[in-house]
Each structure stands twice: as C-alpha cells, then as structure tokens.
Amino acid sequence: MASPVALFPVRYFRFSFTFSSSSRSRISVRCSATMATTSTTITPAIIVGGGRVGRALQGMGDGRDVLIGRGQQVPFDFDGPIFVCTRNDDLDAVLEATPSSRWSDLVFFQNGMLDPWFESRGLGDANQVLAYFAVSKLGEPPLDGKTDTNPEGLTAAFGKWASAVAARLHSGGLSCKVLQREAFQKQMLEKLIWISAFMLVGARHQGATVGVVEKDYRSEVTSLIAELESAAAAERQLTFDYGLEERLCAYSRAVAHFPTAVKEFKWRNGWFYSLTEKAIALGKNDPCPLHTAWLKEIKII
Image 1 (tube, rainbow, N blue to C red):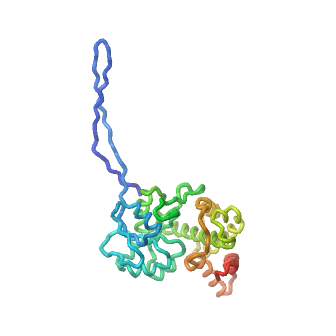
Image 2: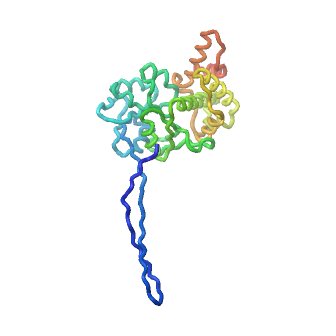
Image 3: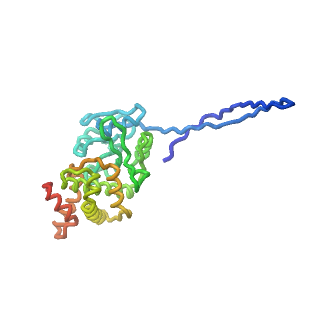
C-alpha cells in the first residue's frame, strides 16, 4: 500500500544574477519549486506483551500505543489493532482478556501452526504476521531477515490490519509485504518447515546453531525439509513455489547465530507428528518417517 504523500504549498524563490558588461545589464530569474515530503501514518495499537518484539513494535509507534502485560484486560474502548506478542501457550489467556467484540482486531505475531487453535476459537480469518526479523535483546533494534535469495525481505502480514502492520514495520526500517490468504498460508507453512527442521536437526547435534546446521549438517536438514514439504503439501493440497530448500537455507545463513532446540512442540513439530498419527491410525505409511525417528531419538515422543 503506498504511503500517503503530503504536498506543501508551492514556494517561490527569487535568485538575482548580476553580469558585468558595458551595458551593466541586470537579469532577474524567477524560479519555483514544489516541495513534497512523504509521511507514514502509524495506526495506534494495543500491544499485548512487553518482551523483545512487543517493545520493538512500540518503539516504531508515535507514542500513542497502549502496552499491556499478559493477563491484563484489553481495553474495549481503544480502536485499532491489537498486537499479540506473547508465547503461544498464553494465547487462551489473551483471548479471555479481550472483549469478544475486539477479537477480529487481534494480530498474532507467533511462530508455528496456529490454524487448529484459530478454528477451535472461531478465529478462522485471524490477522497474522510472519515475523522474519529478530530482536536479540530487549531494547535493541530488530534485525531484518533479508537473504541472498529474498533481498526484498520475507516478513509478511495477512488480514484487515495487514497494511497497518506493514506501515509500522516500514517506518522502523523493516520489510513487510501484504499477502492474500493463499499466498500467506504457503509462507506460513514454509516458516513452519524451517523452524521444525532446523530446530530438530540442531537438537540432534548438541544444540548446534542454525548456521552450523546449514553448513555442517546440510544433507540431514535438506532431507528433513523435503519430507516435511511433501507432507504439508499433501495435507493442504497445495504446491510450494520452486526453491523452498534454498530459501530456507538462505534464511538460516542470515540468522546463523540463532540457537536450536525443539520447543513449543504442540505448535511446531507437533503438527507434523499429528499427520503421522493420523496416517498410522488409518493404516497408512508414516508421511514423515525421518521426522518421527529423530523425535524419538531425542526423546521428544
């Protein structure tokens, strides 16, 4: 969405140039210039969660945001988006603290597979953000996850507040594209594959960083990526854009310092394991045998 442009009135400048000659003629030149400045309107938001992401988003605002902690009641008389920047396991508490009339204004910044939770809470068209930026420490500026395969950036937003999210991130020097549902779903699944594959392979190797996984255990992680890609595509009946493996490895190079660990199993690797359980219950082959074997190896299941 293009930023609004504020046009200032035309201003005129008079410049006089004096030329020495026998006639000592004086020539006046009248010039005009139109001054335009681009300004971005930041929509005030309620921000739930005062951690690294929540504080970073607040820092990109214009001072009109309302920051509340987990468990605090969400104001009902504040128009605008509600940025949810908590852990996934806190989402039920956030929903309970939000008036039902404002549920359509919730914007979820969480990683992982949220669709089953959305469906169970009647939030099928929920606003979401795939945040491919990182905040290393509280108060530090975010690092944009631009890569050599996607120099334009990977962060994406979906929903009625997507343009407002993009405008805020752009004002903070970060990339963000606004996507429609189908395109967003593909990118959401790509990120789910990334976090599930790289965290699991890293956990097999004493918590190697994402960069070490990409460099030293690439054959392992690409085999797992291919397996999870196939399973996700079959489950959602879609085709991923060509080059998924390289895109995910490129992102890993951009955030090479990230540690690895299998966390929030229900929201991440747990979705792929649910496909395994469903297939086995139907007497079919495990669609993710490598994933299952490695989860057992590190005693997650």
